[in-house]
Image 1: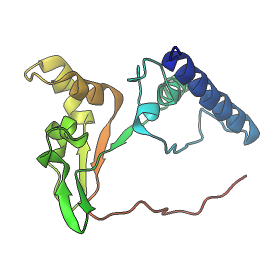
Image 2: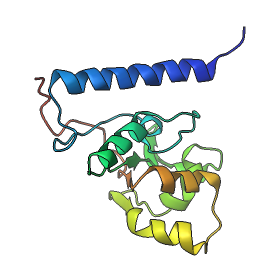
Image 3: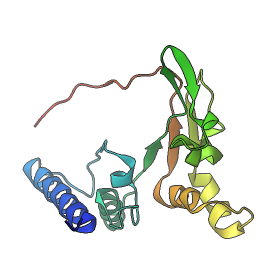
Image 4: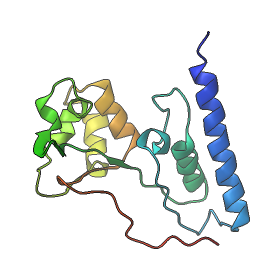
Length: 166
């Protein structure tokens, strides 16, 4: 059977955007003055062209914000330290791990504290000074995200707010 990844992903992203549009309409969301927080996977919330070869919902929100005189902030959560079988594991110890691909950023993280890397003041130097040779993945991170957040070891995700539906 022929795999149709692009078609399937395109359909899924169209569905996400359709639901977003319906949600905006349902709550009378004003794109010029209302604010929102979208929590979703980093590939979907990134600005620009995604690794799935599509413009996803994050890019749509970025364009809408710009069009209405606002800005969008794109966060990327990465993890370095985690527990496995009661022992702390550093993702950078395994060069084949997913996390090791982000070593340029994750090497700054420490196991006992949150690490926040604000890429915004670095973008001008990264894109225009051209002093550093980096991988395409790191270039994508600079293009698609504004802030990288690396939690400390042992932090389980939890809500810090109460969900309300209109």
